[in-house]
Length: 422
Image 1 (spheres, rainbow, N blue to C red):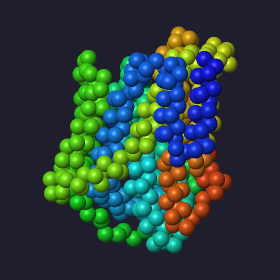
Image 2 (tube, rainbow, N blue to C red; image 1 turned 120 degrees about the vertical axis):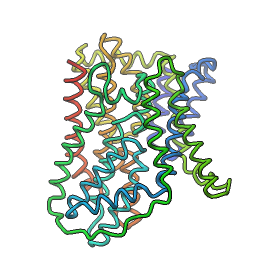
Image 3 (cartoon, rainbow, N blue to C red; image 1 turned 180 degrees about the vertical axis):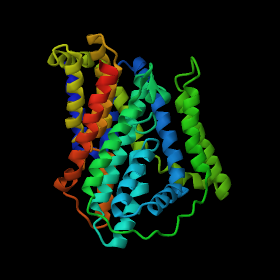
């Protein structure tokens, strides 16, 4: 157990220190676990969650086609037409980014919506920094709302055996989707106050022309088929992954037919974030290694003891520790590590694990909004601003990030306990 813990700590520190090499670090660590027989090679394959990996890869491919179709840009244009001034335009774009990111990767959402905010800022000769920050943190917020909204949600769905509909209603109770939406509505108050002085009128521009509606159909197809699959009793474990991958393949075939060039699919395939997929595969094996060594069980007992065996105290520790840690640590490796820990804690306490799962997801997902490095969406937004010549200081980011995060987390913290903990 000690050797496994040492390797795990070295791995985690390396992931923090060398973010550009995270995938290779995770895979190298996984190989070490297998070579040292901490994770027996015959068990290693079982720890790879192919359903998660296929869902992520398939959804990424479809999203790339969706962005390429220019449908998101058209939707943003329509929003601008209906807003009276800059304040409502920015808040509407942020809310729109949140809604989109409930079904599309957060980074992709920021890449779609941020250029609209930049265009508004250039026309009015104002700083785009606050609006891009608002879009980034809003997209990160609602990634936890659905099964396909974020990598962490996909991992939760796999561990907790949750279907698409379970995020909405589960065991006769409302699901995490409504909790996230409640937080999103309250954060609108924060945004409206923050941008209260931005009352300049915006002149509508020419609408973006969509070059194909088929990717939008594919994206809607993912949602519909995942919902339908949730009603199939005894379905194969890889069903969701097959759905996402199949629709992506259909999208690639469509791309070939439309362009009449087989090589055109490579522009889509190369945009898929294989780095994240490789990182997840490595993390699955690393976590398998520390599970086999008994580290997960030990961590769960420590947290249970700190919480003095009180489910509410343990829940509180998980939520707010996740907020603090995710403000500085990427939430993918953190959630991947903590999901089996929360499962074991729930077993130790004899309670339903869902209250801890949802608390973990709320804390880890929203905690990243406190700092500019806490979430990939934030890093992407800051990167876009840097290219435009704007350097964003942590203090400037946190001026909006902290009240936004606290509002959303406190809302989720209370509602999840009221719904699932009492």
